Length: 240
Image 1 (cartoon, helix red, strand yellow):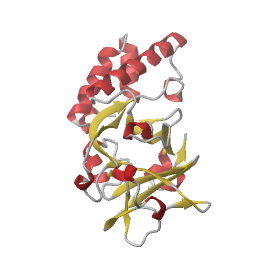
Image 2 (cartoon, one colour; image 1 turned 90 degrees about the horizontal axis):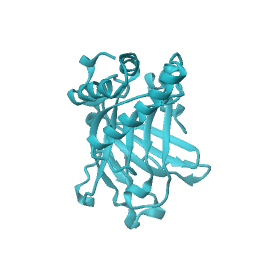
Image 3 (tube, one colour; image 1 turned 30 degrees about the vertical axis):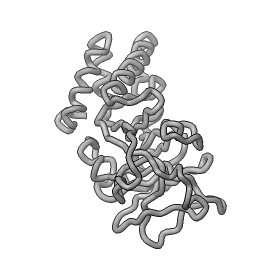
Image 4 (cartoon, one colour; image 1 turned 90 degrees about the vertical axis):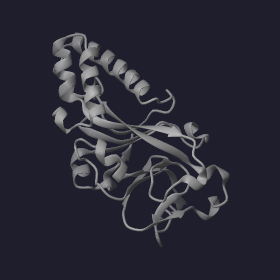
C-alpha cells in the first residue's frame, strides 16, 4: 500500500523493512506485501483505572445493558479482551475495521465469537465469576507496526526457492525488530491486523493468558477472510 496512508511510525517500519532485506528485489516484494498492523503492549493497571469501552485484555467484559453473557452449547465463553475502535483508528491504514464502538473477543475451545458493540456499555461478568480476583484484567498500549505474510503465503509464491528462504529470514528478523520497537516481551506478542497464510486477516493474535498472570488459554488467533471483514461480518471469524 502507499506509505502516505500509514502512520509515521508505520512508515519508519516500512523503511526499516527495506533495509533488512538482503537485496533490492526482496525489498521490493516485501514492501508490496507489507500491511499495517498494531501491536499490543500489556501493562499493569489498577481495576479502578479501566474506562468502560476501553482497550484491555481479560477481566470483565463491557456489554450493552441487557445483553446476556455469550455462551456456546450452554456454557459461558471465556472473555479474551476488547479493543476500542476509536483508539485503533489512527493505525488502521487500510480502514479494515469499523471506527466506533468496541470489538469484543470470546472463545471456548475452537469456538470463536467476535462482537462489534456500540452504544452505551456497562461492566459485565458471568455470575460464576463475579467475585473472581483474576478478573482484574490487563491494560494495553497500542503500538503501530507493519506485518508480513508467512513465507508459505501465495503472495510470495513467485519467489525462487532461494528468495523464499531469504524472505522467511526477513520475516523473522523484522518481527524481532518490531517486537523490540513496540517494547513487547517475547511471550506477549499480542497483535491486531496480522496476515494469514492465505489472503486472510489475523484480526487478533492473542499470545496467551499467561501474559496476564493467568493460565486459562494458550496462544490463539482470531482469523477472518477479507471479504467478510469488509462487510463487517464478524460471525465468519474462526480460530486458527
